[in-house]
Amino acid sequence: MNLELLESFGQNYPEEFDGTLDCISLAVTCAFNKRGTLLAVGCNDGRIVVWDFLTRGIAKIICAHVHPVCSLSWSRSGHKLLSASTDNNVCIWDVLTGECEQKYRFPLPVLKVQFHPRNDRLFLVCPMRHAAVLVDVDGEHKVVPLDDESDLNIVAALDRRGQYLYVGNSKGRMQVFQLPELTLQASFKVTQATTSATAIKSIEFARRGDVFLVNTADRVIRVYDTKRVLSCGKDGEPEPLQKLQDLVNKMMWKKCCFSGDGEYICGGSARQHALYIWEKSVGNLVKILHGTKGEMLLDVVWHPVRPIIASISSGVVSIWAQNQVENWSAFAPDFKELDENVEYEERESEFDLSDEDKSVEMGPEKQEEDLEVDVTTVERVAALCSSDEETEDVATLQFLPIAPEVEDPEDGALANSVPVGGSAGGQESEKARSKENDSPTPAKKRKYKTYDIKLEGAPKDEIHPLISNKTKDKPPVGGKKASGRPRNDERKRLGK
Image 1: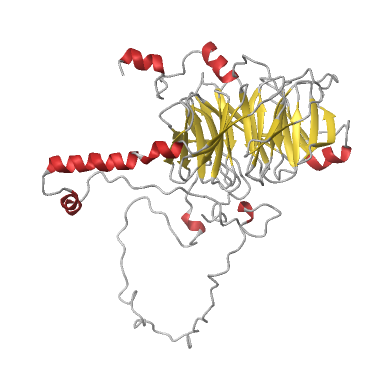
Image 2 (image 1 turned 30 degrees about the vertical axis):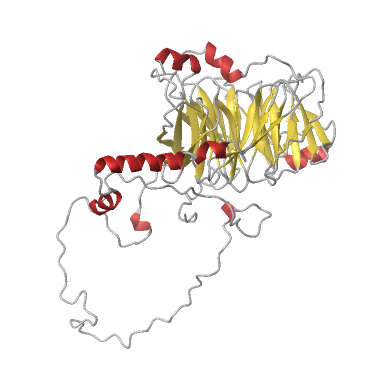
């Protein structure tokens, strides 16, 4: 992909609806890998569907959990995928093989998981009504200190390089811890105009630039500079760079995110399927994208490289992109677009090596000099590298290999596969072959290690908000039924 040719000359945000990705089962959450070539979608039947985003086709389906997947995070290399489910389990998956590497059981629901941006052996877990937890892949964990022991509504996020951990609570208090010692470096309070505190709902970092946003309960998205926050130190009062809000409808924000280049901010409405896009530097609203009426938004993510947004509502992933207009005259100035076919009259000497019809000699023709073209040097693509990287990471997993499905094989292939015994023998051999292929699968699935994460003073009998919302809400628009694996009682009823 040549990013220079995809440059849109200034306008770098999506403008219109560009189709959907239907995962068969209902989608709940999604996440792009570092390059934006793969999109992982967590479904309500516990499956993780990995889409090849360039071809818009399903590359792999991982039967991950039994309960809905509520959070996903890619490792930096793209080889591993971290998932959390409403059954309090967190798993690490090998994306190539689709197998579970480690499983972690928590005593209470998990709201969010995030891989360390530079270390795939460490990840962050935000349990419900508990302090944030840093977990090592070997099962060891550290509980992040609380500012107020009575306030357990915690949100947390690692910055883009994993050097600092930002933690917020429902009283508007923000803390910045330095890793790995978890020493407090800075703290401040997010306040409204009336100096009263407001609850922090989420913290999101830009992939480029030292900025982050804080989504609060007062319907305002605040953008802060990390350097300014750190320089203010403990109990500082850093002023936000921007305050973004919907002044007309006073919209609550379900999910917020930065664009890939960090120049735009997208806010997803909590009341309807509507996406608001602001320009970070000025703070002006540049676009509102409206989805289907009556749908509730679940998740929003921005493509890491291109001006594309993926949003989830009613179990379907919607894609928003720019309207690409083909302008061939930009490549060849003498190119003319024709509305209808025109008969072309060819000159006699048009394709001759030497023009016999040329009447006047214009002097000796200049011979083109041979230019050496360097095809070995790989130039650094700035959009695909971090600011502290000299070259691109070669080990990054960008695409998944897919075995082609041959619907009508050739006659020769059929003749070779069918033995002398006839078609019945062929069917038996097919069954035997499928048994051979299926037999090692259960043995592989038992290899992963399971760790029980014990958290002192963890509240019991907590219900994940994703499950509690499902019981309250009406069935989704269109009457779609969750097409996952049926429960045990349903199996008995169906006689299976």
